[in-house]
Image 1 (spheres, one colour):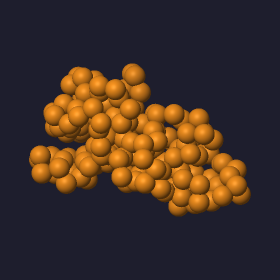
Image 2 (cartoon, rainbow, N blue to C red):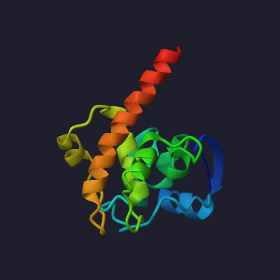
Image 3 (cartoon, helix red, strand yellow):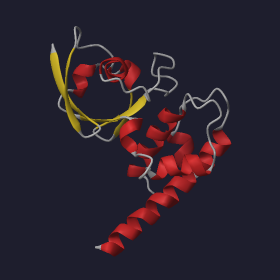
Length: 163
């Protein structure tokens, strides 16, 4: 069965045996984008978080059939070395990762939240960023999330001044 979806801005058609295959495995194994991680397989930890049409999705339990015709963004498509997303920049500046395994999921969840709530409070973070980090880098992540919100607002202000 062929399913077409846009991944990181590029139209992709994948040939899969089962349309209920989790999107995570299509992204990692078929499209060879290894930044999205497998954590629990039960949508509980958030290591597999990516965006489908701008919404944060736990891809380990999201059948690929639901992504048909949609825009999927993985950590590889969020930003790059030359032009990092504000979340990626904040993660670097705050030296967030310890082992780093869960961090792509946290960054994707944060980026989706910032698109909805640009001026975050600690309560917003507590209610929405519910991924799990085994290393316990939550304090550094909270600082980075606030920094990312400020960086994103600065970026938007600079872009509006250029217009």
